[in-house]
Image (tube, rainbow over all chains, first blue to last red; front, top):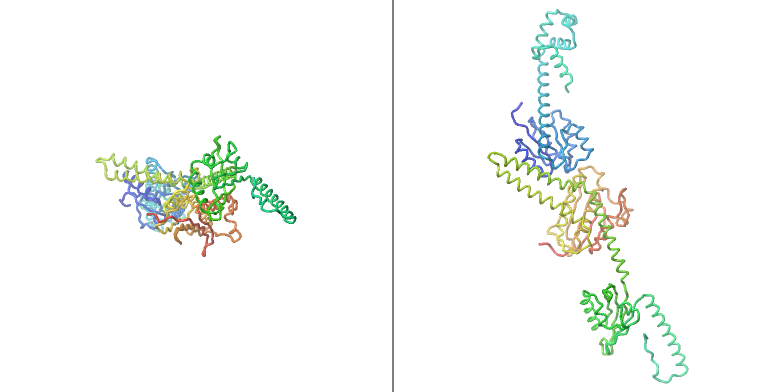
Length: 206
Length: 395
């Protein structure tokens, strides 16, 4: 997508914590960006750059960490979150993990644990980005099918043989064979199994 | 012992005079008995010092109070029993009594030959001769040791109660104080690990490593400050009076409450009319008052939406010689029927409250020579304010 390295977003109201974490991430080869509040984070200029959020559970005034997570969750392309907290309470941990937080770490957190969690978060982000890109690609390919090819595609993945499709659509098996070859080519698929998988991906996608 | 000298033998009395004299003597006897009874019941000792012949007359109670060995209480005996620290005050009281026929009183501390300690309250009056000079002193002494002991015991109970309440409050704040310590500790750990990485580079990133070390030092001091403020509050010691810069005291409290504010989602604001004066008092007790009032204020706002919870702490000198500290919340306010009882011990509107916070706050403020009161704000919420005598503006 784009060549920029991933960005670690640090959201913590404590300037000392922010700058020390930033220094640690920079020294470990990550780029960081700092925010003192949930509002500041939400107000950042929009971009499509990959990354993750290291989020303090307790933020003063306005949105807390958990509330920010809730808001971010409504966006399909939201960044994975690693929670940091001064003292972990079980209910908050459960809530955060249930909503898909990558990890929930208690301050002060050893570098190895923090970097491991951030690596996992960045991997998760990369994977979800790849999935989204794949899906968009498939959708574009689906768009390129002619109406007739579309019909053939649906019937093929429903498990019909060429003969049955030809009867259903009122044409010859030969024509169906040609449409089918066109469908395989447009989806860049080389087996029926792959075509079925593509159909499932398109169907399950949000 | 005679309290009044008889006036007989001046001339031969007639029958009617004898009658009157008998009545007078009867009245005098009754009066003496009444006085004796009062002295006996009050356990007061009576003394009389004639300055002309320097003769001191005392009753048996005085002898008992001073543990006089050979039935004699002289000025020397008195001074020999007097605790060394009390001597200057007594000498000043006596020298004043010898110049001025006014009432005098003093409390002093005796040490008996057996080493036991006794507290005595003395009251007396000087009487002048015709030329207006003090001619005799007369007075009462009372042993108030038991009273003093009870007072000390009550003080120590109060101190224990106040300490218990501080512990309870700190227990309430424990999570936020842990957070307040964790922040610098987290920063220190991250900086230490970053510094290690920076130094292991080829070539080492020395400037950035130095910056990390400087931040470690800063955060270490910050954590130490939290612990110092906490230790000050948790210690149990008799109240002591010292000169305290009010601004520093308020900052200490704000430091301890900052995370509690964050967790209760209350914006903690201060408006200090600087320079603030110094006050004379006990640091722990005054901080306890501020913390109690602030925690109360925060609790009163729990029903509000988070963006409206603001606690304002102000300090200013409305009048010379007095500083006024106000804790302003925007919570539910004080119900009219509760207003008169707010500072009573065991009065509480909280389901899990002990009803001691405000009563202890009042006792502490009044012991410092201040006043404390509560009022509803014109818009919303309540203000609890107190005054303290101000010493002078801190440099």
